[in-house]
Image (cartoon, rainbow, N blue to C red; front, side, top):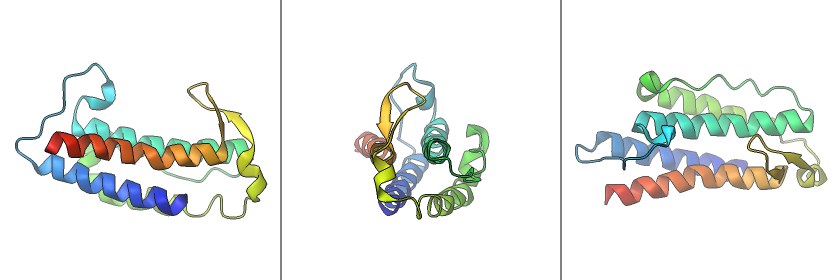
Amino acid sequence: MVILHDIEMRKFISTWKLAKASARFKLPATEDPSYQSLDHLAQHVLRAARGYMVWMCENLGLPDPGIPATPLPEVIATQIDSYSEALLTAWREPLKDVPEERFDEVYLSRWKIQYCIDAMMEHAVMHPLRHRFQLENLLK
């Protein structure tokens, strides 16, 4: 799942960059603050990826993974490459020695839904995939 997360995050960032470079690209009007701009969307996806790993470490009683705070939308375009590399590197280590049976333990997510660690990892893979899919459709 960590490898799939890495793949999907990189695909999202690549698609985000295509949208950012497109003179004709426009996000649909919405009240969702994550869609105020492409920069807000990038921050949303990166911040969520950070949050998923922090949540998993907290619930498993592991040390804080040390992932830096996500850059603000105002600077994310200039920091997306360096930040995403730091984020994805930090994702590689924390769970590697966790016994497999612990991935079935259930905890309350920050949005008040019960998740086991395995399901949260699946959620973390699908999140950038979903936003990439949205951007790809808007680029058509």
